[in-house]
Length: 463
Image (cartoon, rainbow, N blue to C red):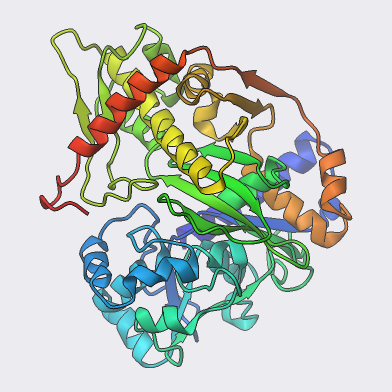
């Protein structure tokens, strides 16, 4: 309910700014786009529309033991071939099973056929339309591809996947899967300041960011530095199943065919900066980390593996936890600050290396957005770490822009992706690599050693 309330507050404040600060009128708004945190799992009562349990967010690791159990089942090694994702605590599937097992309310609703499941997009669209009175119950393909329930090729719920997770489709309501840009499927806002305005676009946040970066061509890639870090590489209209620890996902679905991406997800990025601020007290505001990091020339050998929730792509080590290596009597706060920023840059390099191995093509440029991309120091570190150019647009709220593009394509604001590319323009900053290949190799080698040393902190077992 907090998610719904915050969305309604956002609408009210954005509309106030739109009218009173920018001088526009509410009746000029032709449509709304939705973008959302993916994987986060919500269940509610199909008849009343009331939530039955707190949402479980994408970084939550309470499903760790359940995932270990599932990995021992016959067919566990075949799941990624169908849905594009490896079995881990990250997708929605294990979160939903955990709720059914551990929430008496949810279990009862499931047994009685009243349990509705959705990711955040489905929940917001359902509630903004008026809940059970209108019963708009849909998800788009980008979000559905994060659940482990959808066949990545057919874009439909797969019986083999649902059977593996022991879900009885007569007892649970799953949202209808539609395209990311639709004229009528998402309904319209039911009440409030935008009552009657249609919702015509929907995409998971990382897919929306790729759209906002105009990553419409095969071979284009973007990295969003938010709470976590998410790198998507456009692979065209056929899914590519990674052999190097990455995920296959739906990038967006606007026309007759979906566009796919290979994705690498880092659990901890901006949240590591908040950790340094809130738990260590090194800085008072998140953006001050760059100033602190610039008080020293380098990390002086300090390496921070920010595995607060285990390590995601391309490592998939659930048993890892946050670990700092290389502390000496000379280690200062600035060294730890640098190591915190480097942790995201090194993990991004590991994902880029995997993408290059999967695609057979080296990436020439990386488009970036999100909160941490505001740091010039961090982006220069990224260029130096990877040895490729980093391009940062002036308009960095690319996730919101992508949701707007999805909505605008369905409501006639733009007639085609080509028109979007021509008319949605803006400048950018470019960071060129300054490091040598030898320097990059030595630093990444030390990081890779630290990753291997942080395994097994939860239970002593290697994943």
